Length: 387
Image (cartoon, rainbow, N blue to C red; front, side, top):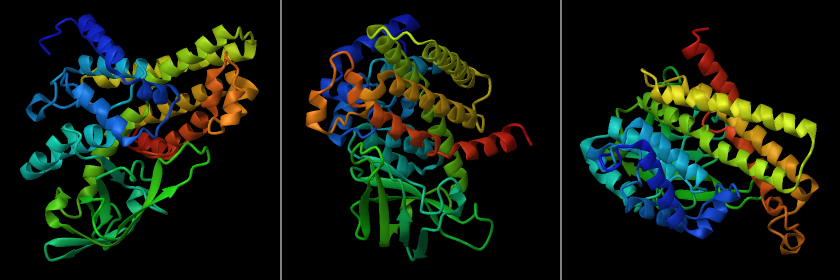
């Protein structure tokens, strides 16, 4: 961006814009480590960013993005996290859009990308299924070709934001005759199509409506909704998952959470050698993950399978830090923030007690989604180390 040739000036501009424009209601949800951000707030924040041309930060200029270099994008993501702001519409902006840019037809680019950029369409991801989560290639939800339409039957599992999404992108079985990675096709569909049903899944932490199971009963979609060639969706999925895994590490947000723990410990004069040692080890580990992220972002070769290393270690340290946060609050973490009576008993010096248990339990799933830690280790062994 020519407006900010100096990266420090750019960083200051981003920081100030977030501070002045982030809605207080949204900031509160992010501070409480919430994943279930309401649709209206997501749209509002996206459009606030889009006023500056920042709503789709990773997009090239030819598709309406800011055309930032890698350092500007890195600084922007860091300031978004440290400023207690959410990323903007992750599934559409950060996952589907780059995939459409790479594999989509010209008609799909013209139809899909502007609606993501304008926050007109919310997207969700239809990958995992009952019995096909970490082993994604075992998916069985079928899309049978019938003239100029596919007819879909089956279900998708753990569908984040499926209840607020207008559309879904997903993987569907179109052939079962060969290797299981073959015969998978990448399709998009409307969530209000006849035969689509969305059922909420209650999570252990009770954090609210966030994930769902989606059922398909003779759902008909046009062939023009296919991205790429029929049966060749696995290659597209691997590309999209590399984008998801890179973002799942959430290094900057873990840095912000670590700082909140330090502030809590200082405020409450925690003086425990074992806790201090754990906090120090966590900070060292996070610094190592940060340097790994930096190396992958600014290395000579783009990260491919190596992104699995970042996802593996990033989510592990993320959960270690949240466990530390939970332990720092102590017995007050048992308070249920959904119970008004309990909230009335929150100590003034421990406002974190109202949400940290939910956050701790909810984020346990980050070591599973986008490919479990065990899957990441297999990818690293095979594709990176050549074992």
